Amino acid sequence: MRQKTIFVTEAFTMTKDPHPDIRYVHALASNDHTLIKEIYDQYFPRISAMIRKNSGTESDAYDIFQEALMVIYTKSQQADFQLTSAFYSFLYGISYRLWLKELRKKHRDEVTLEDDQEFRDEYDLEDAIFLREQRKLIREKFEQLKDRCQRILNLTLKEQKSHQEVAEIMGFANANVAKKEKSKCKSRLVKMVKEDIRYQELL
Amino acid sequence: MATYDNEKHDKIERYLAGDLDAGQRKSFEENLHKDKSLRRDLQLHKAVDATLADEKETALEKTLQGMRPAAKVRRISRLRSIAAALAFLIAGYFMYNLIFGGPAEADGPIAAWFEAGNMDVTELSAESDLLLSEGQDAYNAGKFSEALNKLEAYLQQEPTHESVRIFASRAAIADQQYEKALSLLTWFEGKSSLNIQEVTWLNALALSGLDRNEEARPLLDALKSTGDDEWKYKADGLYNAIY
Image (cartoon, rainbow over all chains, first blue to last red; front, top):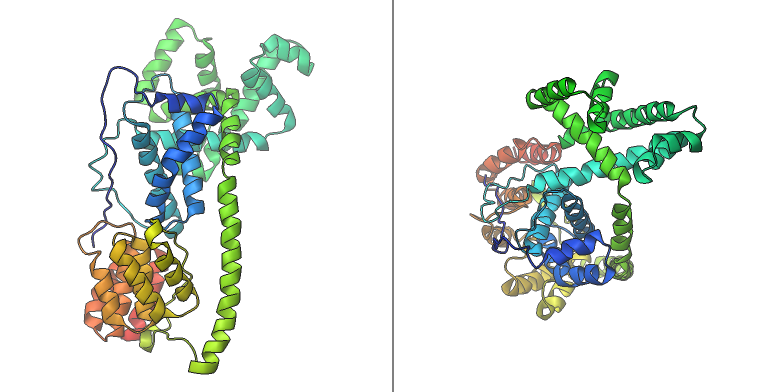
């Protein structure tokens, strides 16, 4: 039985200069509503058509489109990220893989990508999706931590307070205690993520 | 279940904080090259720091979520359509039963294993909107013969719409037009498709409907060997029904 899929994307354009579509990536990072709206207007219909042609609904298409943009955002946060193709190629590649994963989840299908030769994956899309899934899991587990731990991690990681400042705010004896408390909380969080079966499945 | 020890945690944290001396750092980095799980743990530690420090991510999520009102409107509109279709279906069912004694359905051994399901696909081009919407309405009202005509006409214009082709094949099976179903499914031969198992299943149903059970058998065997419990259950069921 044949199990293969067609995967067609726009041709890659290799250039040393930043790709002009990098503005869309910047728009995601800067939460530029006008440009993000442009992304929706330009590309959603095409992504939606791909999903609807493959057993999905429009609601599925919105979910996948939104998640694909979040994946791009996450990937773009890596220091060495470069946009080397049209934004749409990148978006399509991620949307396709996300939808494939969703179909596998729904139907437990063994759908393969063996004919996926027309797309040159220069971005390591699987890694990009992994990073996003990992972030979602980290946020989910963070919400399950006790308030005290959430506060310590927020002070140190989000607000970038020094250990001394954290000690003063939290009423600890000194910076060393704050450092140890932060380490304990982070250790708890890491452990919760690692012990979740979804993390094991991501690896 | 993964294990995670405090010593490893402390080492990674000290490495990230730059608290290891030169020798410890060198040793740690050598271990990184050799130990895949250590690399994963280090990556996870970095991801925790990056995620919790990143306020822009949640802001972007909110923005993207906020750009979906159109989808909500469409969904509400679709819910209304479904409610209207349901009302129509119920009224239609009683009228149909009254006049014709019930809609057409697959018969014979496949009857117990065939499910027409509800059709919910959206259009690709404005020109063929009407055909698809009429075909879908007819399908969901159980008027499979009419649905088949509309969906076939739609496929003349949009031959690559796989979901529509699958529903047209289902309509043909429901209307006991098994040859027609096979002819519609022929389009998938040699083509790549994410719906390959559904296509295999419909082929097997249509062949069984024509008593071509020997041809259906390898298809059912293929479905049984996918490792998917649901397909295995259905394939086993139909297999037992026809043998």
